[in-house]
Image (cartoon, rainbow, N blue to C red; front, side, top):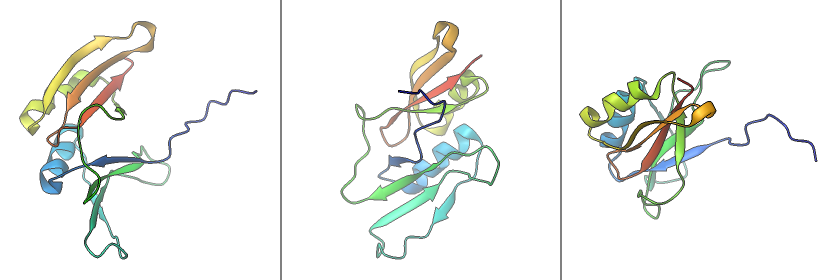
Length: 130
């Protein structure tokens, strides 16, 4: 078997209860602007806000999703966001309405990470090499 250096993840969905509150949290912590993704077949049952994406740019392939049968919460999949220095984004978490669960810690030769909770109760990771 050949090991490829290809990222196997293509999309991330972070489930939310309050879309406006969650959107403000992620936009403030990561200093980004999210865009609404039209959902013509959903009849308002699903609302999606996309993380920034640009051809040949720095991209986050995923969205915040508000959907009747999918709930946010702790203990599920943990998504890590790449940062230049995870302490920078970590420093904006509490003022954006979230909580720091694990302050920046060393992973030895593998870099650093922080674990935070967003305004919806989802735990997310922040990762950097410095």
